[in-house]
Length: 386
Image (tube, rainbow, N blue to C red; front, side, top):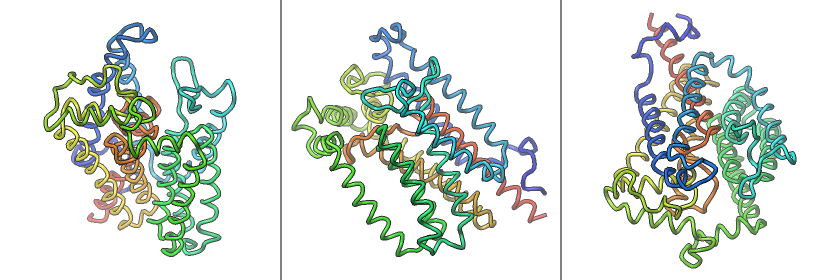
């Protein structure tokens, strides 16, 4: 059977339920929690017209667009995604340039990360995460024979990532920078880059991150606030201290869905960066463990699907699947770590759950591609059995 046969021929059993249902569960659970976390802010804001369901309706539209985009992405064979990967990455790079143009890029809270299209704000860094997965997988597939070479295997990708990183730091969006670098380095490692070179790379990256943090007063203040949020609980430690209060109030089973106190104008960004803190307060330790478990299953399935593709000699598809797993895993881990006070505060949302149009659409596109990798694996294995 042709491994690129039309998806319309599939049966329900041909989709990985351990991937599909946890992903849909996180998306729908996120919608419920976005409503719960945002209702007080929506009611008290003139911008929203006092509509309690303002953010719920917008998130619902984003989710619908994302699901449609994901279904469309599923229809496209991986060979076409590979052909489009360099061009998609170039589009993402241009968008990162455009967002920095004065009066074109939209600035919020000192960060210029959005391009406004009427009521819609596009965040290029969210799309760039997906484009980085596609491009890094394509680059590694083309350079498999040169992965042991510093000059041929590593330097070209390093130059590209430095340019992307420079644009992200200009916004600034340090969180997206960390995620995209993790994607590129992770895919290079999975592609067989020289182990000694990889160890040196990790060391250089660690030193570079320290320099980037220390050279920026803003990032330095975040580190100090992270180390002791209670020292300045009304200043640089405000977000973290209230996130920790939310976790403490939730205890084992939470105070009840919708009963959070911290979302009542105490915890900033409750429906975006600190959604997990609201989940912890309302649903407790059990709710947080459920979210972590669903993410863990999602990442595990991503790597299992990627490994199966590699066994079938589908290198690009395998690296894409595992790259998506790295993306969701790293970003989810960082967001959870920030909410729990284990990592310094960064402007990263919880994938699949937090409010945000560009992020939700990019996540749904990634899931559609991941399901396509799994579907093509199953078709190829079925053809081999016949």
